Length: 307
Ligand code: 3PG
Image 1 (cartoon, rainbow, N blue to C red):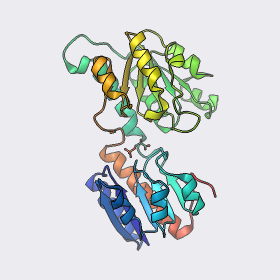
Image 2: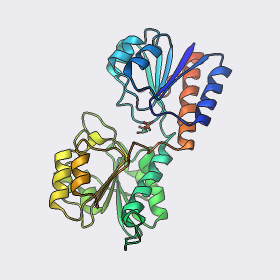
Image 3: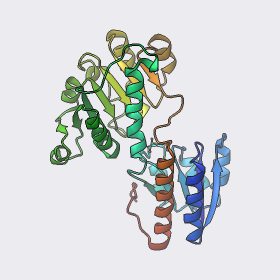
Image 4: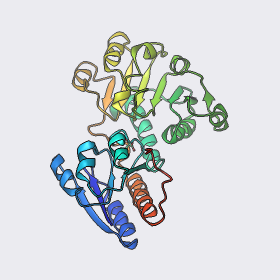
């Protein structure tokens, strides 16, 4: 079978070499489409393949339609909001992600951004420390959990809110469990977002939630831009002179934020949370292995759609 890796933002060379090896050793054929700039390149490349590995690449109904032979699509990463699950399910195409494989990279970036801001862009101006401060983890999945671990190393007090995780699991990690987003935000100076983008979470981080954050309110977003209510974010910047926003995913109103609040807003130039050698290798090889297991044994362990 033909397995295509189609990544607008490429994996590292080592990751690609390893993915190729997994595919070839399994007796399948490896194809690669990297740094494509036109959607038509993806539509052409997918025509003749049974399996597809992507990152944040948009796999919409057109891609599904073009992939006449597609049996499986694996999102090498966590969030699969870039894949039209309905269109895939209608064609009985299995969709999977590779949970946990790039989480450490994302979690480390949270602290990279926090220290950059706290040390005033390494300018030498007097900054501030993380030790003793409260951090609230909003959604306690793979990334959130590692953020908690690292935060403890910094001597921070760690809290978490996640309606889908048992209290006992959070507490077993030595993290304080909060029963609502409201209580988490009103308690913690730092909030790290790790929610997926879906109907329930889109625009859910709004002014009403943010306004109760204590002095020095800082939100770190390495999740999805869609979870933020951008009008509320702008309002928070305007009303709260202490508010800071650090994000790996530029909001649509980035230009305004960087123009008016450049000392309190940091945005990475391009989404880079998962862009480490290790995360590329882990998630890319996991994706390839999952496809081989699916082809050889019908293994659907990481399937995220139903049909
Ligand atoms: C994910 O959902 O896994 C992360 O957002 C990483 O996305 P990327 O593969 O596009 O870097």
